[in-house]
Image (cartoon, rainbow, N blue to C red; front, side):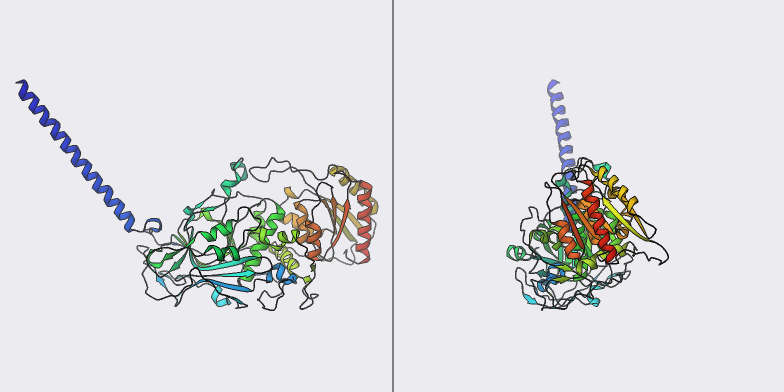
Length: 562
């Protein structure tokens, strides 16, 4: 009996084991089937079962600018001239990748799958050609077509060109028919309220690109190849003294993607300028980024103000108003659902590669002037910064106020101050003081103004706590100022948005902060610049008021105050 029980027990155990093995085999087969299906649907570029979202915005027109001059490339531009230095020196065209004839892809509205075309193409992968003044894209090339309900008409084979400046040693590059995969860019989401990310590391906000973060569409099936070789990339965009050249790293990771593997979760049919920022909460460095994006749009010959995409993970800042006013739209790369397909994607150089930054370390003698006063062929004159300043103020619909002859003339002194404010997640909220007796200087200026005013001339002093004003309020005060006074600090970057013929700058220079920024920028704008070199971080109040009084007298003689 005991033997029989043992046999039945063994049989029961065997049956249980067999059942378990069968269940396990079924589960493995199901798992294998799922893996096969995922692979057959394209892996990283697997199509959505829904049609892609088409992103289109109402583009803003370029405003009329008194100092505007053509950005059409000219092979005769002297690389050593101010015209070349301040942006119109991108005269060498590198055709990094180009395909022909034009491919077109139809979108199956039900499945989101792309119909394949079979056209030949040519490209120079890893090779490049250069020529002077090959011409830029025409308006017809740049203005993208509107997307039909069931067809991605503008998408097809890609192309990638770079416009190189021998003067600045950097490039503005543009790609047609490109794909961005946000999940392949390692960085924070960006655009968060500052208070929600206090203490976040800067490294988390700067992008790290993995292979295929950006792709360019090609017809050929099979492997994916890098767009650039190292020799070409180092020539077009040398790292120089920039420790982390994110734009160079981005280009290193651009790969081709065969047409039959392309899917789009979102499609952007209008031109987009990609911008990567570093010191995004500092006005001076933000101005370099604004200038880079503006120059990029002009060099690309865009007929309307473009949309922007921030390829960084910085949080919100007080500078965002400027971006939104200047351009037609704004988004963060990580806010988009990928893959994102772009008809026309243009990459702006880093702010560190702009003349506003590079010019501080070079002996560049350029005198700002109006477009009408610029002498054709002059190496030392430039209206470009005035044009940029007019563009920025026009974006806020600001214009110089007209003055009635019956009203007394008014002279405003704007005293720019460095006050406590929270700038970014790592900021203590207390900026380093460059003028230890700010309050005393302000009181002295107010006393002087009350004594200087008369029935014929009104004089007022503005307490310039700019960090607590909106950008529009800041610009209004700058536009109305006859004299701008302040110690070295980013707030004096507003010199670019002042009235060049009617405003003078007085910089109070501490021996601990001797920098060329605002003297150079005043010269590049063609503005009157004065300085008081202090013996310490404390200013002599009587010396300040005496100098302001002399400057005011000079402006009155020039009839610069209305």
